[in-house]
Length: 115
Image (cartoon, rainbow, N blue to C red):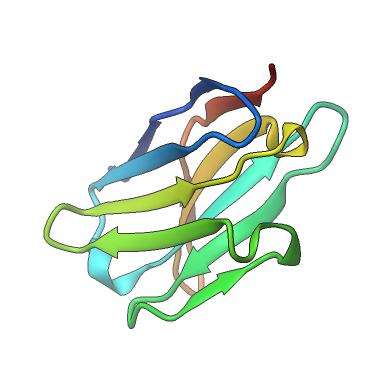
């Protein structure tokens, strides 16, 4: 049974940093494309960053240069390092594992950027 568990969210001041983690179990982790999405209040869930099994990365323009996605296949974990956070980064952040015909989501972790 596949399971993704996010952690690392919280309250941070503008300009601060957070590191999100997503631990996977029940899947052959290294085969999956891993991604972080976020959903702000009143908005649709949207892709933030992704990383392939070969460690190629992709970012939405609004986080380029501030966020870094990485993966540790030995620990079945994907990370999102978030620097220079802005109030508009406030959202619930979700982890997703995907192959061509299947995908799994975590339960989400709240990130709030506020002074």
